[in-house]
Length: 342
Ligand code: 5AD
Image 1 (cartoon, protein in one colour):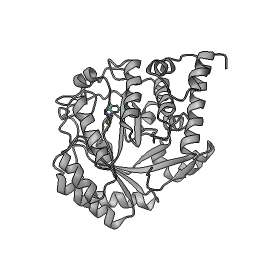
Image 2: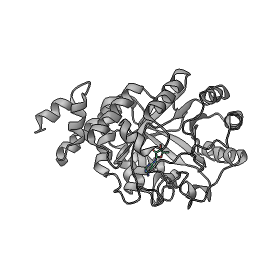
Image 3: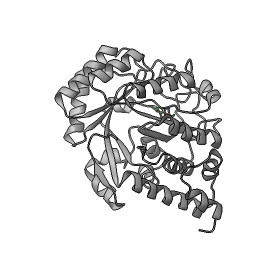
């Protein structure tokens, strides 16, 4: 390697914020390739070759929040809203189990129509019928609700911090604050949830410093999963005319996150597929080790439109479950369909 500064940073155990920013700013193709291959090695050393599959059900696209970047925001009146019934959710869960995937993610907007007891019932019926781990991703809810859902049998909760820059966070999120979000995340972890967090890359006004802080915050929060995902502009939001995230910056972020977070689960997100046809394969080769596959039934899935085309990505791994094994074996990886626990 010609770049001795890069060489010494890539061989350090702990990275400072300055070093993280340096890695995120790399522009030389060979340097970037060195970063990617180091991240892939760290992934192999700490996590092995398994790619953990999770089946995700987007069961409601109602949301009480008004986040400037998100197509589900309450002000978006052009979106056809839906709520799935308990029976429909159970059927979709059955399809995940039929694919021998034992980890189910239930995600929705912040939709309080599904009250505490209703979510508990959904968790219980899935648990009664299937041997599956359940991850919830329902936004910020009541603390007593988190308690109840653990008792009902849910194991994990994903609540992304979105951005570690508290001023930017405040501008993007109506009513919500970064401090409050972190209180929720820390509470969930304290009561025993496996937690997931993460950011959005390429938000208007975001700097490389902010992304470095995202990675360091993920480390401090000590979650089981951290998702670093690109921003895709959504036509029905105030952010419709901003640029989508840069693919290379997104991949660099995943790679640096792997160097810093070591054994944490890092997904190759669906938004990566929206950015680039083989984006998810690329993510898996620079540090990611988790894939979420969409099992939301039609016609609902087309309306979970956080950003355009979220669920209709031709060639994406979600539409190719039968071929997934072959695709992943091509680059030396194995599928793990088990419950994902540390
Ligand atoms: N582009 C990419 N991801 C988005 N999310 C919301 N809006 C967008 C967008 N425009 C992500 C947020 C949220 C998750 C459910 O969807 O990170 O946590």
